[in-house]
Amino acid sequence: MGQEFETARRTVTETDLVTFAMLSADWNGVHTDALATADSEFGGRIVHGALGLAITTGLVQRTGMFEGSAVALLGFSDWRFDRPLRVGDTVFTRLRIAELRRTRRGDRGVVTRELELINQHDEIVQHGRSDFMVRCRKVG
Image 1 (cartoon, helix red, strand yellow):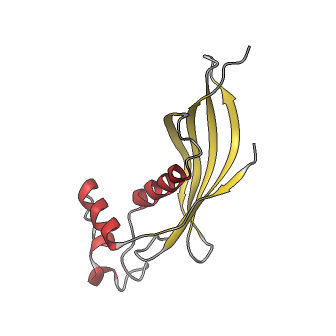
Image 2: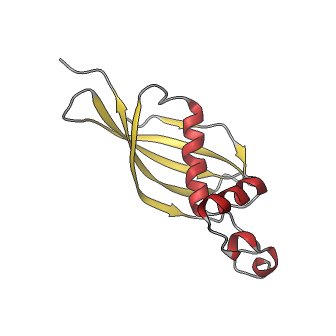
């Protein structure tokens, strides 16, 4: 426990935003209307918060650290949106192993991960916890 990892970086693109809007059917103007948002508290369009969460988990997946052992994502808790995510931001995920526990079956475990999505200014954009089930060797 306590191990910390950082993923590769990736730049959020206009294509990411539009594709996510199409998939989610969320065409809210805060994401898609540059004129309406120019004078808003955000000073322009912002990327969907849920897309930031998806990018966070995708960056973790790219590390391969759970490849071959992943069973299921169990959920997210205390997820916070600290700063707006914007097209053009380059982000990475910092992951810390917060807790490990075996299931009653004994051949699976739950890894509680603390995740942070961090932008090019070293600012935390989103953060929270995620429980993830993995295969493990049976004890005894």
